[in-house]
Length: 108
Image 1: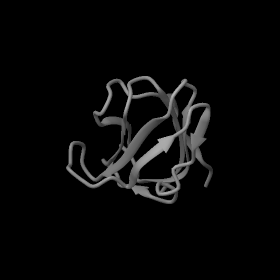
Image 2: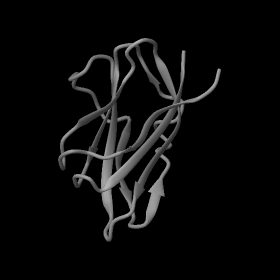
Image 3: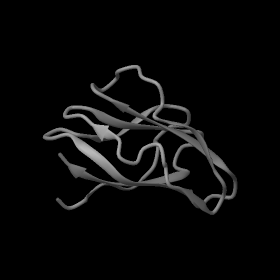
Image 4: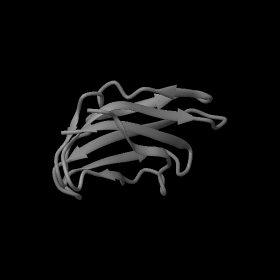
């Protein structure tokens, strides 16, 4: 199976709020690559959540992570994580429109 692009250069709409950035609607998806890129002048933080149902209250899969300015984070806790059919990948960042997220995956 080949990897597909799940998210390409998406940012959070609001600071400190969870945004759904991907929903596995047809099949479950396993994350194969994740990048949070920071092209701003200061460090930013993010957390990532995988839910079985949109809006479900769960602990962060990717704990609060600092991304230094002009650097990227590879989200090691998200690699090989499975988003179940109907589930979501949600991101919470410390600042709106600051971190750019890129995610690829493989449908199961």
